[in-house]
Image 1 (cartoon, rainbow, N blue to C red):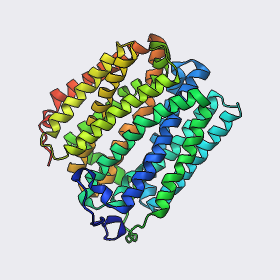
Image 2 (cartoon, helix red, strand yellow):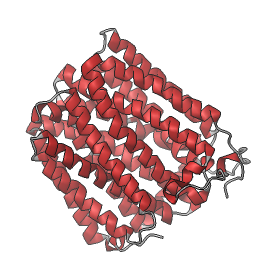
Image 3 (cartoon, helix red, strand yellow):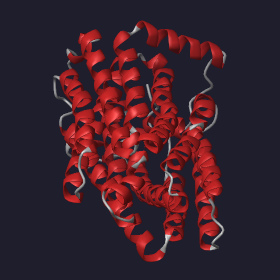
Amino acid sequence: MEPAGPSTSPDRARRPHTFAALGYRNYRLWFAGQLVSLFGTWMQMTAQGYLVFELTRSSAYLGYVAFAAGAPAWIFTLYGGVIADRMPRKTLMLITQASMMALALALADLTFGGLIRPGHILAFAFLLGIANAFDAPARQAFVLEMVSRRDLTNAIALNATMFHTATALGPAAAGFTYAAFGPGWCFLINGVSFLAVILALLLMKLAPAQGERRRTSAAADLLEGLRYVRRHTVIRALIVLIGLMSLFGIGLYTLMPAWAVKMLGGDARTLGLLQSARGAGALLGALALASLSRFRYKGRLLTAGTFAFPLLMLAFAGLRRLPLSLALLVGVGAAQILVMNLANAIIQGRVSDALRGRVMGLYTMAFFGLLPLGGLLAGSVAHRVGEPLALVLASLALLAGAGAIWVFQPRLRALEGE
């Protein structure tokens, strides 16, 4: 059981079930700080993508940047999980968040000085990927230090809502800021935004750390987790599904800067609107799932999402009008969050507590580890056959994966939630 104390004692004021985690002071601090920081992160990501395309006019280079940002996940994420169990997670996150702030401010300085080059952006993306590889395991494990186990699922759902609120607002703000003042201001705003989450962490009152735990070697623990996933077919299928989403679904977002200019004849503002439409859909999907947290037929809902996502991507690939494109992206965002959040919830509901960290580590590796390959693949294919055909091929691959899971894992769609 989690220790009693400030981190797991809700305030007396009762909140609706959908927002139960906000009854905890530490979680409210986290939610507010992360919301501001993620807003800045999405401003930087949107501006960075458009700046890369503006400097290179190359869809392939967009893939290179996505690859550089995600590649550190292969090398450092599992070790980051080990570190998160060997030092206070709050301390680790203060280090990682301060590192990300320094990188954003350095990128802004180069841009304001007119010195920025594509190679610089590649290097910064790789360094940011390293910081994220250490930050992500600590961030996921930190939730139980802020709320009780009873409200853990609600906190995870609200984390998704927070993330996609920033996704809906940040890119649009980046597009207009980029067009009006230039990319340097987007990077500077992101750097300053990290102060919010750093301050939130410093203000938290956490329960005292528990005593030392008996540890086996990292290699032995990892092998045990791999064997566990291999034996549990539903968990294995869900991790494979998340890997497919990362490998082929990421192409839509990697190619968005090129799509805004070449397919829709727009500029940075168009890119911001496209990204925000996808984020708005994801936010709506996250809120819907929070309200449906006790919906019985979770397997059927997940299965519907696995088909809806690629079908909506396929429809988007044929559009050349901005209003219809925005409407389709709202649906794409909702379908994506439906699949990702339900897969996460189903895995967490079935894995034993003793193996939760390692299984979720594999889940995280399937997601973040294949993102760079997906970005590289999307950029390379688009460079050879064009962006529309690249999206069509990715959509067909996802449909094939959904069909295979439908045929070979009928237990998955029969799952019922608690």
